[in-house]
Length: 112
Length: 113
Image 1 (cartoon, rainbow over the protein chains, first blue to last red):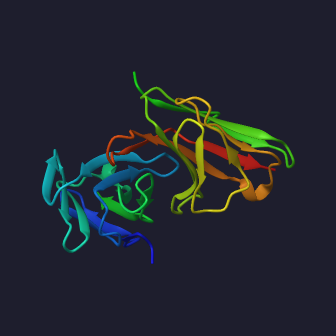
Image 2: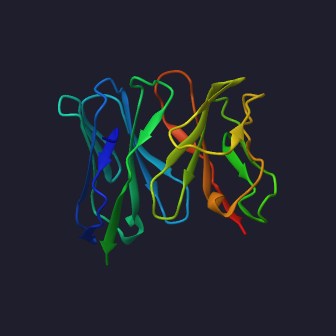
């Protein structure tokens, strides 16, 4: 079992809709969670960090963390074609404090 | 401006050559990482370091080696490149205090012919 699991997609949404991306993690001791966006051929870019239960909003992005369910999500409101990318979920601070665990990524397609 | 730099961005090299991929960061981060990623595939951790003179192997077996003599510098070396080493190599760093986010360099795309 992978430390962080994501649906590989692709997830297709129309322009202007809400895109919902999800991941689960297995190490209950994980402290920090991150969402990265990766365009094809580029390096991952940090979008959101979340450390405590609940919602965290930044512009069109909202990250949600539920530690009891070991579940992290990312909502993208008013999706734009430029949001089309692969989104990576990551955890850190668990039993191996120095390592990050990345999911395999969910590919998002926003159709004009 | 604090950042993380990788050089070269692209490298095409012949089989059997020795290569070193450079990674430097100006953020004062203690933790640094090397990932390997093939197109459309997931990230694989190949090496990491949590401070000067500390290096650890990652989850993916790799024929590469790393060193950490200075905080800001974490080079990756392949003693004898092979076509199977063709991939994108990504360097990242993070602060040692708490489990904070990692920042990635722009990557090195390596092609071994």
